[in-house]
Length: 374
Image 1 (cartoon, rainbow, N blue to C red):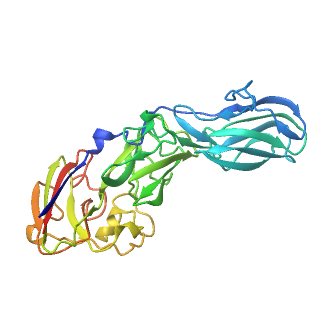
Image 2 (image 1 turned 120 degrees about the horizontal axis):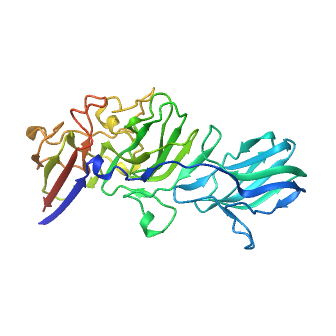
């Protein structure tokens, strides 16, 4: 007889409120980060000599990252009319080389569309005057920054970049909290990460979804966060961490045993709602990244206009006789006659909507799985 046991923890949201990025007060731009204000430059390469450059080292480069911002877009500023010029800006973002092109301005500022961790070369196709190249903030709608992922679930302390936050044994929503009122800030927050190996993305936009001394969360669920991008404004006194909803990572059921049994015990803390489910499908091919899709109800918070179409991941109550579904208390159940391929615990409010009476920031649970077979 073979016996396998697993113990998985679903921590309370408030315990790891800074799971992705630590609380940050503010960050800003630098108009001379790449190239300092220059009276005149001829067509060709321009010396990188700004405040974030490595001059007099050769070759020169400008590192746009700091303890808060991993990368930013690059600004081109001039008090003269250089609108006929085209700037070519080359460098790296997350270790990948890239190049962007910027058309000059007339007594104004323009920004690259791409983000740069490091700028290694700048050139222009004509003579330009009274200009500089800098680092975006993002203090206005044209500026964008990628934040350093330095929270308690990140690899930041290992000093190995690029930094990512990995949620071990769980897939859950991501929260955005601020002690300030950001509802009129114009900020767009983009969370990019993975779900079962697939890239997913969710944005918190200005239309009523930004926090006001509160917390909002994504509608998608993630098992890792690889990028946090902010544009349109500068968030203040904020943190990005774990949300309330999601599921445990799928556990493989040894369905090849001729006689097999699975026992499940759940011990809860705080206010939480959960269900046990299983599937016969290969979950590695599924692209659903919304916990509500498994229940067939609207997402828990900030629902989009059109619900995502589930890729036919069908979770069912495999323990109906023990009523281990939609629970908020300790429970134990077993599956003895029904072979599964994968099983999991879902943490979601089946009635839809964000209901603090069913799940809140104090919700946590410990799950014990024991499978035996011959």
